[in-house]
Image (cartoon, rainbow over all chains, first blue to last red):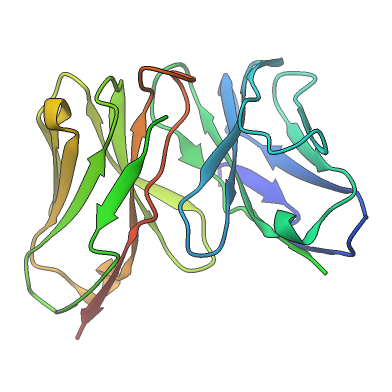
Length: 113
Length: 115
């Protein structure tokens, strides 16, 4: 389909490992968002891109979290030295322009052992 | 900082009932508000979006209202069906402080419709 896709869908990491999560937004969508959803909670904002520019990273919980979108399409969320508290579902959303509906991907479930 | 509360946290109803899900938010300076449903292990599906200038939006059996000044939104589901069982999330966008683009989510209402 033509929706937002994310990979991998599931990731298990040992504490201290680095992980990279990928998001493919809907083609042509300018805006891209990352959210973190802990078990039983609603998603929480992490960061926002407009094209390749990261305009807001106020929600990133620590400097171990890094996101990029170098060509204004695919985005990668990287977590260095993973900790158990990083275990969550990481959701990506895209939007054709600002402000409009945000369309969400299926998420990546990260489990840190 | 925007805070969003959804009541009730969980709801179980027999098939065919009409029901109302409530959402309240602390910062009324929002751009719009979206309602989503989330099925177990899945991403979020957008249901309705209400612009800050609107009072309500309808889609099929769903009707969402917005009272921006009092910081409230409701999602009305008519003639509920077992397929409506999911978690429903409310998310206002923007506020007085912080990003105008980000959504702030409540913890959701987990709805179960019994056949």
